[in-house]
Image (cartoon, rainbow, N blue to C red; front, side):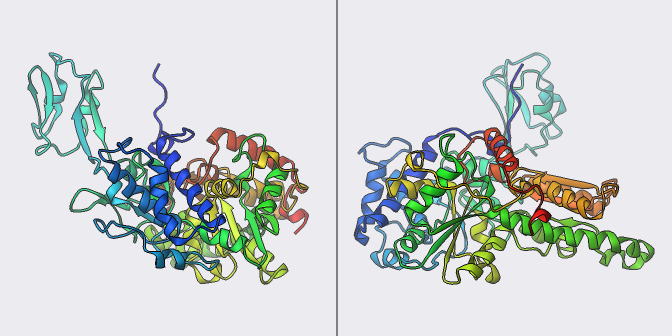
Length: 521
């Protein structure tokens, strides 16, 4: 029996591919440059360190390989990409501008490195070598445009006539007809990626929500995000206190030998004054969204009695912790988003508010699986409390630059900032379940509270469409959306395989000092 088919963004997850190798080597090289106080001119050595052969390894030319790496270096410094075709040495002034403990990155966060894009074919059907030239040739019979013919005893599709209906693929007895789709576009759940006039991938930034699934799905590594590791390292080397807030998906991301206590110790060794659990912020969110839900349950009867105002009544609580989900809902279903997505801040913000209250001059760095949190920090009231964002992958580069091996660091006392429900946020369904359990603990177990959840933006948009049409019965009171497969544990900045990450997050949640947020908040 064939193995189950994987979604495009699952196909290379957990595999250490050359694309991942280059990405991580660039981050590490940039981090080392800052840690070792290399001069701005040193930046031009990095493409030659990464691509150290004089003959091409990955592409048709070593010059193109270095051009792609150079653009990755720019992004690692938080710089904008150059205009396509305007390649050359990185300007010293740009490097000096980026070597600061102040925020420098600007929108867009997710970018296509067009010199690295191979202009993959999109939305087309082709006949593969599996075609046996059978007598039945049903592909020719079902085609409504006569685009399929038999040439040299095998099927052939005329791409000018083909309307991409897929009927030929459906009836082929040998599965010899394949559907081709650009991997980055296939991974995008909000249809933000198309082709420009020259066939290169192009991101519609008005649609993009910076989920990063295109980044982990491009087999050529032609899409990348801006990093803040240069500014974070500069802050760590400065005089102000720097506090790390680490997302609950961190468990198992750095290998089985790196316990939460060792990771906390490694972060302090790097220069962080303290390390706090974002799961505390998750608990605050649970309390806020529970309050909203209890109020909704009380008011829904009034809306039912007044049909004229029903369209203006809140019908469900949409979770707010996933930035990409909330942005996608706002952009694609504004009428649902405006009334129903929770007004609560994300967990990242709630814990940051507490850190800033305790240490007003602290520089707060969010560490997690998300790229979209960098997007969230452009919101003014978020930017007031969260200074920088980095992924688990970027944190590894910082450890390497400081020559710190977390497995060899004496463990600190493990964090006990949050409840079991708050620590369960990163697994799909965890947010909705937390709000449900907290609500029932307040108003009673007998109350029926229908919940629905979806992970991946494609599924999230499908769910919102069903809600808009009134197709769900019973109508949900809690709607959870997660942009990444299986939730935050499947984020683009993660390191661990999905199943292991899910398992370890659940184990860590059980070790929490409290079961529910109400037990201590």
